Image 1: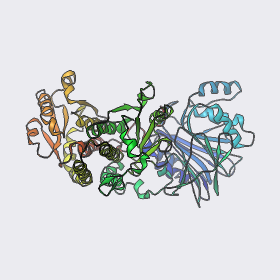
Image 2: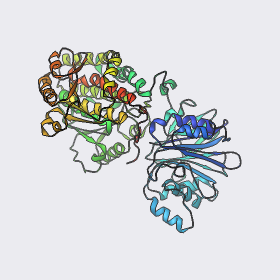
Image 3: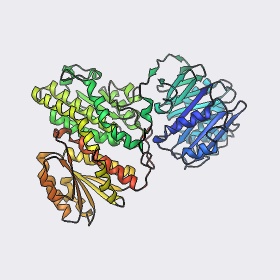
Length: 608
């Protein structure tokens, strides 16, 4: 959520800040603003609405001269979207500007104390407290003022700060909200995420909790919250800069769907060597893997749905009991973790607040944590005992597609490795699965080739009010993700149900013309699912079926069928999700929705 970009260097700052913020629009926002030092004072411009409003207001940044500045895209938390609540925020004299991602949990008592000292507040935000606190403690030394403030605030923050009488410096600070710092020959940068500065530098530093960075035109210095200098090593980002662009596609989401074959190949290929699975990142011997008695998969949103599939696959192959939990519930319910438990945290960004808190809770209890993440150097990647990178590259659309598919691939590899080590599958069976896994990228290519067929069908349901997804076993896990994809980008009400639960209340919602999407990829459950399809058709439903090749019996119980290439049933999710992604996408496009940036949603939820 929200986005921060800052720059100090030899070029005009405002155009670079605007360009960087445009690369962070996927994170979700409702207003935008910039503060630039023009050589005499800090100039502030901000507005409600899309970034284009700010671009027009500043003529692309041309009316804000200056080589040092900070910018922000805000997603409202404290205070409704408005010009005055937008960031940056200033102290009363306009000599200190602050942008902030996160939440200051103790801002109310801090605000009260500041008001008692005569400070006047003009916004409803928690962030304005920071601007006035900095003013309160500033005695000419920015670092001293910042560290004093950080010792007094509670909550999460990523901060960009400029001081009018220190025009050759920008400051950044971080706790539990992502922030990176980059450097190049043209200057120094701060950003919430890599795509914002990928055009300008590939050399970045990942800030750790309660660190402060001092950025100058010719270098960066890091400090602890106690003002002690810290030495950090930069990381070279090897993403293709074009990966963060649309490359001719109408939307990032469509582009990223088409990148799924490559994403899966990039995730599995480095871990398959000599017809075996080698996951060096686990940092666990085969003996240690064999001793695992239970697994907890903890995640949010689509990553949680990937985890539900992972439960079925791991239990089926490796015979290890798996619990899948929503991260926001796991951290508060005082979970019982048995000895020899492995906790797996799944997150695309590696910064998801609830997932990160679950990781810390698990480690505090002494349990080994494996992070499955996409962003190198992210908080979860750094704090987990071991990390399994999914190599999906930058994913810009808020609704995940390729990162989800990469998470599935990672879970397949892990399940197969555990099964082989534990001796729960034969070598012949292992090789069959390996062959099937390698075929998945090509099979997805075939399914993506059916997009016109899916688009034609989706156009019929642009005006739908309610759509239901049903399935059994792994098909229920697929239904969860298919339903989420549809409703988060098209705003059509959609629900996913275990098909066997229809009789327990759901079927009362079916009426003439209601679309029911029935996923049926497990041969041992074909007949059971067909029975459920017959039940809803008898009550007037129109049934779309997604099933495996050869299941012709399903045609009598459905009105429209998408057939999937033959694969191992435990891998069926990777294929079945493709037509469901396309269906949701084309319904959203038909309804005129902002597919890449759905309302009220953020790419990375970094606050509770």
